Image (cartoon, rainbow, N blue to C red; front, side, top):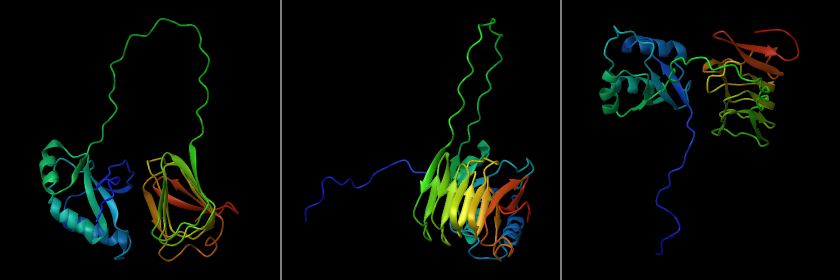
Length: 247
C-alpha cells in the first residue's frame, strides 16, 4: 500500500484550551470532598469533563501537605480533569511534576523603578480612541457537544444554542435565539461582560468565572423570555429585558 507522502504523521498547531480554575482555600481532602459534594448537589454531570487548573495562591503558610494524586482523583470523581497548578511555590513544583501535572507560570508585570520627570514638552494630540473589540458572528445552530470560543472578542449568535452546547467569549455574549446550553462570558476575567438572550433557557451561565446553574430551570416569568445575565459583586443576576425586575 502506498503511503500519502504529503501527509505528516503529526502536526503541532496553536490551539486555545479553556479550563476552569479550582481555587483551593483548604488542602484537607475531607474538607474539599465535602465542599464539592455541596457545590454539585451530588449531581454526576454538574461538570462536563472540563479541564481544570488548580490554583494554590489562597492557601496559607500553615497549609497541610497536598497529596497531588489524591487531589487529582478527587477532582476526576466530579468530572474535572486537572492539567496544571498555578501559583505554586518552588518547593511544591517537584511533587506537582511527579504527579503528571504541569506548572502554570503566571508572570506578573515587572514594576520599573521611577525615573526622573522629563522636561516639559510641547503639547501633543490626544491618541485616537481605542477600536471596538472584535466580534465573532455565528449564523448556524450550536449543537450538543459543540464548543465555540470567541477569544478576545464578543460573541454574537443568531441561531439556537442547544442543550449540551457550550459557548464562551472573553467579551459579552449575544444570542438572538433560544439559549439552552452553557454560556460563559468574560472568560479572561472581564467582570463587566454580560450575556444577552432573546429566549433565556440556559443550563449554566458564568461571568468572569462566577457561575450559576439552573438545574430546576429559570423562574417561570423569565424562562423563555428575553433576559440578560450580569455580575453583581460575587452574585449572578438574571434581569428581564422587558422590565426592570430582578431575580
